[in-house]
Amino acid sequence: MAVWNEADADKRCNGIEAFWAADGNHFTPTRVFSGHDELEERVEEAYNEFVRDKGFGFLHGSPAGHHGIVKYLWEMVDPGSGAIIALGSTVLCLDQIDRIVSEHQFVESLSSQA
Image 1 (cartoon, rainbow, N blue to C red):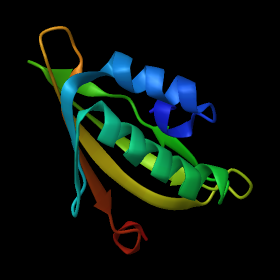
Image 2: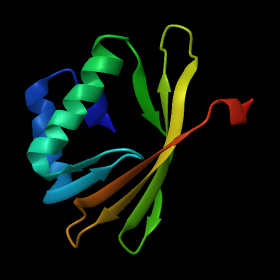
Image 3: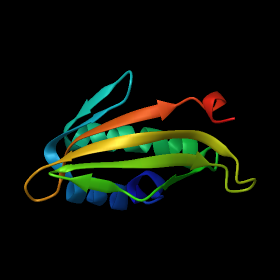
């Protein structure tokens, strides 16, 4: 999750290379990103829109996993007010050396949380 909040582009790239397999995928409900170059573009796009430009931050809950699958809940938060702007969950599939092979992002409706 730290990669999504990282201001330094080189550190973001290094994090992607460290945590994702070279052919790793990131799936959102509407988009697919494959390989380090596309993952770097995805993370940079999200960072620029939500963290740099809007000042939000991403937080995650405690991960749980077994047999190469990990899941966790996440929130995008306005640090000034503490308001939750978006929330969801992520499911990771890991390779034999615990690098991300696929990341599936789910966004939940805030209205169902009221």
